[in-house]
Amino acid sequence: NAGVMQNPRHLVRRRGQEARLRCSPMKGHSHVYWYRQLPEEGLKFMVYLQKENIIDESGMPKERFSAEFPKEGPSILRIQQVVRGDSAAYFCASSPGGQGVYEQYFGPGTRLTVT
Amino acid sequence: GQQVMQIPQYQHVQEGEDFTTYCNSSTTLSNIQWYKQRPGGHPVFLIQLVKSGEVKKQKRLTFQFGEAKKNSSLHITATQTTDVGTYFCAKFTGGGNKLTFGTGTQLKVEL
Image (cartoon, rainbow over all chains, first blue to last red; front, side, top):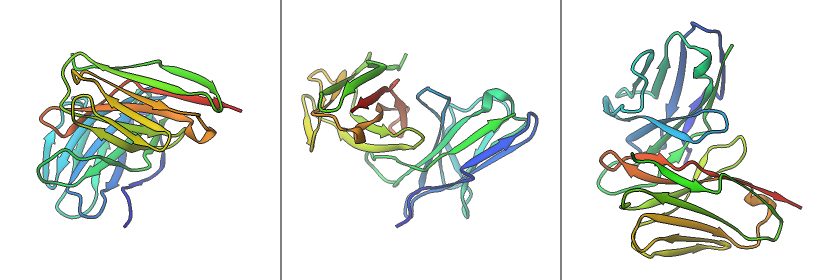
Protein backbone atom coordinates (compact mmCIF):
# COMPACT_ATOMS: atom_id res chain seq x y z
CA ASN A 1 0.00 0.00 0.00
CA ALA A 2 1.81 3.06 -1.27
CA GLY A 3 1.97 6.06 1.01
CA VAL A 4 1.31 9.66 0.11
CA MET A 5 3.28 10.57 -2.99
CA GLN A 6 4.50 14.00 -3.91
CA ASN A 7 6.37 15.21 -6.94
CA PRO A 8 8.66 16.70 -7.72
CA ARG A 9 10.75 16.22 -4.59
CA HIS A 10 12.87 19.24 -5.44
CA LEU A 11 11.86 22.16 -7.63
CA VAL A 12 13.91 25.18 -8.61
CA ARG A 13 12.16 28.17 -10.13
CA ARG A 14 13.31 31.66 -11.04
CA ARG A 15 11.38 34.62 -9.70
CA GLY A 16 8.22 35.20 -11.73
CA GLN A 17 7.84 31.60 -12.90
CA GLU A 18 5.06 29.23 -11.92
CA ALA A 19 5.44 26.25 -9.59
CA ARG A 20 3.14 23.22 -9.71
CA LEU A 21 3.30 20.75 -6.87
CA ARG A 22 1.50 17.40 -7.07
CA CYS A 23 0.17 15.13 -4.38
CA SER A 24 -1.41 11.69 -4.64
CA PRO A 25 -3.07 10.68 -1.38
CA MET A 26 -2.93 7.24 0.12
CA LYS A 27 -5.27 4.72 -1.46
CA GLY A 28 -8.71 5.05 0.03
CA HIS A 29 -8.10 8.55 1.42
CA SER A 30 -10.41 11.28 0.24
CA HIS A 31 -9.11 14.20 2.32
CA VAL A 32 -5.99 16.13 1.32
CA TYR A 33 -4.18 18.86 3.22
CA TRP A 34 -1.31 21.12 2.22
CA TYR A 35 1.17 22.56 4.72
CA ARG A 36 4.14 24.86 4.27
CA GLN A 37 7.32 24.72 6.31
CA LEU A 38 9.74 27.62 6.08
CA PRO A 39 13.39 26.86 6.90
CA GLU A 40 13.88 26.15 10.61
CA GLU A 41 10.18 26.75 11.32
CA GLY A 42 7.10 24.70 12.06
CA LEU A 43 4.36 23.57 9.72
CA LYS A 44 1.63 25.98 8.75
CA PHE A 45 -1.72 24.83 7.39
CA MET A 46 -2.58 26.12 3.95
CA VAL A 47 -5.61 24.34 2.55
CA TYR A 48 -7.89 21.34 3.08
CA LEU A 49 -9.59 19.69 0.11
CA GLN A 50 -11.87 16.83 -0.68
CA LYS A 51 -12.52 15.59 -4.18
CA GLU A 52 -13.57 18.56 -6.32
CA ASN A 53 -14.11 20.75 -3.24
CA ILE A 54 -12.05 23.21 -1.25
CA ILE A 55 -13.19 22.80 2.34
CA ASP A 56 -10.92 25.25 4.15
CA GLU A 57 -8.42 27.60 2.52
CA SER A 58 -7.91 29.89 5.48
CA GLY A 59 -4.15 29.39 5.40
CA MET A 60 -3.66 30.20 1.74
CA PRO A 61 -2.13 33.55 0.77
CA LYS A 62 -4.78 35.63 -0.96
CA GLU A 63 -2.83 36.06 -4.17
CA ARG A 64 -0.79 33.79 -6.44
CA PHE A 65 -1.66 30.55 -4.62
CA SER A 66 -4.37 28.10 -5.64
CA ALA A 67 -5.16 24.46 -5.01
CA GLU A 68 -7.37 21.83 -6.54
CA PHE A 69 -8.21 18.18 -6.06
CA PRO A 70 -9.97 17.02 -9.23
CA LYS A 71 -12.20 14.00 -9.55
CA GLU A 72 -9.42 12.18 -11.34
CA GLY A 73 -5.73 12.65 -10.71
CA PRO A 74 -3.58 14.19 -8.01
CA SER A 75 -4.13 17.29 -5.95
CA ILE A 76 -2.24 20.29 -7.32
CA LEU A 77 -0.86 23.26 -5.41
CA ARG A 78 -0.08 26.05 -7.84
CA ILE A 79 2.04 29.09 -7.11
CA GLN A 80 2.08 31.78 -9.77
CA GLN A 81 4.83 34.38 -10.18
CA VAL A 82 6.97 32.90 -7.44
CA VAL A 83 9.05 35.14 -5.18
CA ARG A 84 12.05 34.30 -2.99
CA GLY A 85 9.81 34.18 0.08
CA ASP A 86 7.97 31.19 -1.42
CA SER A 87 11.09 29.05 -0.92
CA ALA A 88 10.02 26.38 1.55
CA ALA A 89 9.11 22.74 1.94
CA TYR A 90 5.53 22.02 0.94
CA PHE A 91 4.00 18.93 2.50
CA CYS A 92 0.84 17.19 1.48
CA ALA A 93 -1.02 14.96 3.91
CA SER A 94 -4.06 12.74 3.55
CA SER A 95 -6.60 11.08 5.80
CA PRO A 96 -9.64 8.90 5.36
CA GLY A 97 -13.07 10.48 5.12
CA GLY A 98 -16.01 10.00 7.41
CA GLN A 99 -16.73 10.90 11.01
CA GLY A 100 -13.99 11.07 13.58
CA VAL A 101 -10.58 12.54 14.03
CA TYR A 102 -7.81 10.80 12.16
CA GLU A 103 -4.07 10.93 11.99
CA GLN A 104 -2.70 12.55 8.89
CA TYR A 105 -0.21 10.74 6.69
CA PHE A 106 2.40 13.03 5.24
CA GLY A 107 4.18 12.78 1.92
CA PRO A 108 7.93 13.33 1.55
CA GLY A 109 7.42 16.96 0.59
CA THR A 110 8.46 19.19 -2.29
CA ARG A 111 11.40 21.48 -1.55
CA LEU A 112 10.87 24.63 -3.59
CA THR A 113 13.80 26.95 -4.16
CA VAL A 114 13.22 30.29 -5.85
CA THR A 115 16.33 31.90 -7.30
CA GLY B 1 -5.25 33.28 19.24
CA GLN B 2 -4.99 29.56 18.71
CA GLN B 3 -1.25 29.23 19.22
CA VAL B 4 0.23 26.05 20.58
CA MET B 5 3.51 26.71 22.34
CA GLN B 6 6.18 24.11 22.92
CA ILE B 7 9.15 24.26 25.22
CA PRO B 8 12.02 23.98 25.01
CA GLN B 9 12.74 25.07 21.43
CA TYR B 10 16.01 23.10 21.38
CA GLN B 11 17.44 20.35 23.55
CA HIS B 12 20.88 18.76 23.38
CA VAL B 13 21.33 15.63 25.46
CA GLN B 14 23.95 12.94 25.86
CA GLU B 15 22.89 9.53 24.70
CA GLY B 16 21.21 7.74 27.59
CA GLU B 17 19.80 10.89 29.18
CA ASP B 18 16.07 11.53 29.37
CA PHE B 19 14.22 14.18 27.37
CA THR B 20 10.89 15.93 27.82
CA THR B 21 9.02 18.40 25.63
CA TYR B 22 5.95 20.29 26.78
CA CYS B 23 3.04 21.56 24.75
CA ASN B 24 0.73 24.29 26.07
CA SER B 25 -2.50 25.67 24.68
CA SER B 26 -4.44 28.75 25.72
CA THR B 27 -7.70 26.92 25.03
CA THR B 28 -9.06 23.54 26.04
CA LEU B 29 -8.18 20.85 23.53
CA SER B 30 -10.54 18.16 22.31
CA ASN B 31 -7.54 16.00 21.51
CA ILE B 32 -3.88 16.32 20.71
CA GLN B 33 -1.55 14.53 18.36
CA TRP B 34 2.24 14.17 18.37
CA TYR B 35 4.45 13.95 15.30
CA LYS B 36 8.17 13.41 14.77
CA GLN B 37 10.14 14.88 11.90
CA ARG B 38 13.66 13.65 11.24
CA PRO B 39 16.15 16.13 9.74
CA GLY B 40 15.30 16.50 6.04
CA GLY B 41 12.26 14.27 6.45
CA HIS B 42 8.52 14.60 6.79
CA PRO B 43 6.27 14.52 9.86
CA VAL B 44 5.33 11.07 11.03
CA PHE B 45 2.37 10.49 13.32
CA LEU B 46 3.26 9.12 16.75
CA ILE B 47 0.09 9.15 18.83
CA GLN B 48 -3.23 10.79 19.63
CA LEU B 49 -4.49 11.62 23.12
CA VAL B 50 -8.17 12.24 23.78
CA LYS B 51 -9.04 11.78 27.44
CA SER B 52 -8.25 14.09 30.35
CA GLY B 53 -5.22 12.81 32.25
CA GLU B 54 -4.53 10.14 29.63
CA VAL B 55 -1.10 8.49 29.63
CA LYS B 56 0.12 6.33 26.75
CA LYS B 57 3.43 4.56 26.30
CA GLN B 58 5.30 3.45 23.22
CA LYS B 59 8.50 1.65 24.29
CA ARG B 60 10.71 4.47 25.64
CA LEU B 61 8.20 7.21 24.83
CA THR B 62 5.55 8.32 27.33
CA PHE B 63 2.80 10.72 26.29
CA GLN B 64 0.60 12.58 28.74
CA PHE B 65 -2.52 14.74 28.38
CA GLY B 66 -3.17 17.22 31.18
CA GLU B 67 -6.18 16.96 33.48
CA ALA B 68 -7.51 20.28 32.18
CA LYS B 69 -6.76 19.25 28.57
CA LYS B 70 -4.69 22.38 28.01
CA ASN B 71 -1.25 20.82 28.00
CA SER B 72 0.55 17.69 26.97
CA SER B 73 4.02 16.25 27.29
CA LEU B 74 6.27 13.74 25.59
CA HIS B 75 8.99 12.07 27.64
CA ILE B 76 11.73 9.90 26.17
CA THR B 77 13.65 7.65 28.54
CA ALA B 78 17.31 6.88 27.83
CA THR B 79 17.59 8.70 24.51
CA GLN B 80 19.30 7.11 21.54
CA THR B 81 20.74 8.68 18.40
CA THR B 82 17.71 7.43 16.50
CA ASP B 83 15.57 9.82 18.57
CA VAL B 84 17.12 12.83 16.84
CA GLY B 85 14.56 15.06 15.16
CA THR B 86 11.92 17.66 15.85
CA TYR B 87 8.87 16.73 17.88
CA PHE B 88 5.65 18.58 17.21
CA CYS B 89 2.37 18.51 19.04
CA ALA B 90 -0.67 19.39 16.96
CA LYS B 91 -4.27 20.20 17.66
CA PHE B 92 -7.33 20.20 15.46
CA THR B 93 -8.99 23.52 14.71
CA GLY B 94 -11.51 24.89 12.26
CA GLY B 95 -14.17 22.26 12.55
CA GLY B 96 -12.01 19.25 13.18
CA ASN B 97 -9.79 18.56 10.20
CA LYS B 98 -7.22 21.32 10.16
CA LEU B 99 -4.07 20.67 12.18
CA THR B 100 -2.39 23.54 13.99
CA PHE B 101 1.13 22.51 14.84
CA GLY B 102 3.08 23.55 17.86
CA THR B 103 6.36 25.39 17.50
CA GLY B 104 8.30 22.14 17.86
CA THR B 105 11.21 20.96 19.99
CA GLN B 106 14.40 20.05 18.16
CA LEU B 107 16.25 17.21 19.88
CA LYS B 108 19.92 16.49 19.30
CA VAL B 109 21.54 13.46 20.88
CA GLU B 110 25.31 13.31 21.28
CA LEU B 111 27.34 10.17 21.84
